[in-house]
Image 1 (cartoon, rainbow, N blue to C red):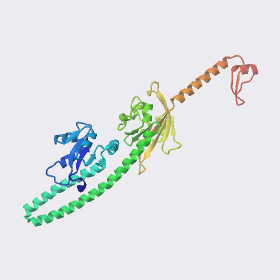
Image 2: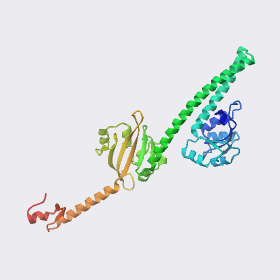
Image 3: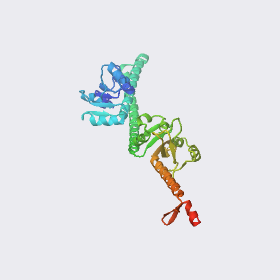
Image 4: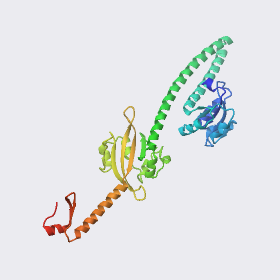
Length: 359
């Protein structure tokens, strides 16, 4: 890390807390370890603490990261936002000769700076103590200092190696999470996901259309109930997360739920939600547990199917059939209705005329 970053001209995208912490070490005149030259900081938040600190120290700042690309010389861009979409855009748009350090690598760089600063300060303190307390000559002090430097460098390398491994694990988890998010978002079935703390982690476009509630106001909150009820009330996904059994779920939905025949531990139900849309909606919904590597429930996924049109069509058909039956029953002429050679309707006049009434 030292050889890679020493005297490199670096710009930072993301002027938050970590940015300020890095700048405080890099700009500390007492720290002479391998460090880069910071040439610019970008953040859309004009009040970001790292951005303000950079501006105070006379470093170029901007609200548009594209402006950093015009700086010269520029060797490396460090991305500290943690925004994967922004990282992708910076990767695609940056000048070809400029290297990119993502937020995973940046954490290693920050660790390196902190370790180097502490190591340098400790070495200075040790040399001072040896000279003042023990009165050793320059050669003895240099020998001790060399041993200390060797040992501390070894520890730094061990930490760096372990951090690199953790970075790969974090990257893998991040890739998996992004894949899952893309699958859920691209699903045409209205879907939302909550974690074990009942916080919404995913809210796809399809459920936005059905409920009228946007993902940007749902994700990161426990407000998913607002899409279905006018007062706080558990959704089926909440009951799954809480480990409610089939009897409890059935009682909660007044007997309208049943276990899923396809997914173990999942339940489904159909209910009317009067506060959705202009005149309410009928929804058929299924909620299933998300199981962690140790077999514990780490969240729940719930999918919806708007059955309002089907329900309305069925109701209208039943009303029409009832009306037809009423009309036919009022006719004094015997009327029989057959379907596939079976009598499906006979009005009251049939019994009067023929003396019998079909079952």
